Amino acid sequence: MAELQKKSQCLSDSERTALTQPNKEYLCNICKDTGGSMVMKKAGEKTFYKDIDGSIKETILRYDTEEWKECECVEIRKINRLIKSSEITEEFQKMGFGNFDTSKVVPEVKNMYDAGMMYYKHFDSIRKERINSCLFSGQPGCGKTHILTAISNNLMQKKQIPVLYFPYKDGMNNISANNYARKDEIIQQMKQVEMLFIDDLFKPIGGKVKVYDWQAEIIFEVINHRYLNKLPLLISTELDFMSMAEVDEALASRIFEMASDFTVTVPKNMMNNYRLRKLQGGA
Ligand SMILES: [Zn+2]
Picture 1: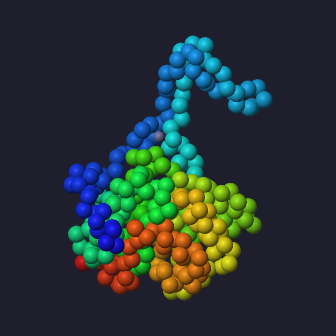
Picture 2: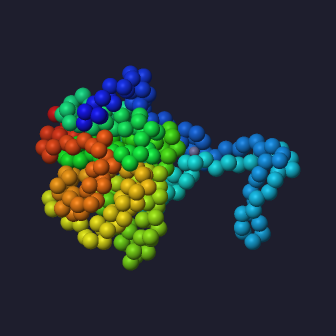
Picture 3: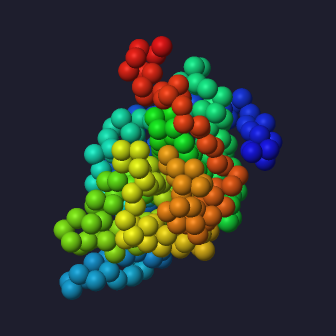
């Protein structure tokens, strides 16, 4: 925490302003959502073509040629189509740092907001380190998902970093659907994608944490792989360290170690529920 506060002092006013700008009208600022662009290639450069048998072959260009180059956002979109979630909506894509109101929140929520911004600012320098992740825990509805989504949207839109959004409950339903038909494919992506965002990890049902063994095993397999390979995570959860350790102690220690520079816990308390307060007219 002291480390975090030290870091938060180096966020300049202009950086803060840049991060709170309203999101651009395009999901991808590079191709402006066209999926790519025409680029000029010179004679002598390599190019690829599809052979009659469908295989991709390499050749050398004999003339200067204009070619279609696919934008990296196409891959990002492909990855996120993997998990069909009702929560990936336009609303979700609009969640940024600029449209999160910090004026009436408790200090812990303001802390979480600052931590999110700092995490994004330091991302390039920490992403390949062991401690490279961000974890927001505690009170449901206090804005954890909003701020982690703001980080995700900035990573995708400004740095072209693929983020796989895995809403825990829907994601697990996707994995078990049709007799686990897509289990291996989804786990593979969760392990390999450059950034994995697990939203509402081990979400309690009716106040009780109920995690099946197969679910804990999948999460451990994914997180252990990312821990060993120093691949970052964004995690929101209602669980504190102790309740997560009851599900799986090794898993809890891995997550809390990876996020030890950027962990914020908002204590459970109805006043922190900003979704609820909005329903009550912002009172
Ligand atoms: Zn693009």
